[in-house]
Amino acid sequence: MSAKARLDRVSVVLTAASLADEIGFEHVTLAAVASRLGVRIPSLYNHVDGLPGLRRELALYGIRELNKRLQLAAIGKESERAIEAMFHAYRAFARERPGLYEATLHAPDPQDRELEKAAQDIVETVLTVLEPFHFTHEDAIHVVRGIRSVAHGFASLEAAGGFGLSIDPDESYRRLISVFLLGLHSIRQVDEN
Image 1 (cartoon, one colour):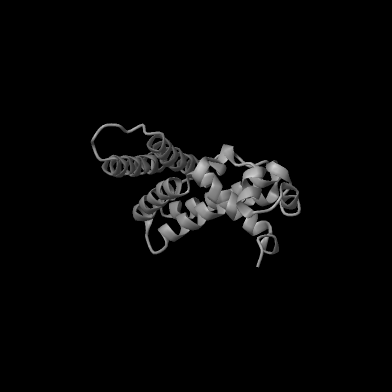
Image 2 (spheres, rainbow, N blue to C red):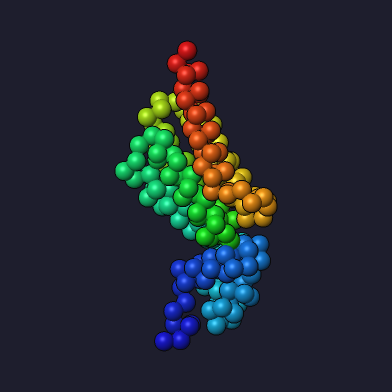
């Protein structure tokens, strides 16, 4: 079967995601994807709406993949253990799929309902894990943002080679998560008073 016979939106997006992981999200071009697939650039337009459409598809795929990992990490765990597992799943995704992860970082266009829903699904996943804490909705959203900020910040610094000391970064991450979890109890205590 020729490469052209297998060409569809899924194969284009998966190929682009693989390239993004190899060369970086910002370096993925239609020419690079077409070359990898063994087709001409115009063939891609039957499956994605140019480079902006391809980047949108990568973001959608990446957000959904990240959400799956967070959900799988939290299954069967309660409260702090579920949050801790999600922290580790987030970092693992950023490490294993760096280009695809990069595609997930921008807030979705509010006019793009499918992308907006995928992003909201991640928020809902984390909110579900936070339910045992009985936070107000506003406090829970702050915690969701905090989880993302901590996990992203650590993963980004790690990817950029920002941890040059010989001290184990895995232990640093575990300690960071522990401090974050202690902070969650502080928020709950303030809400209860």
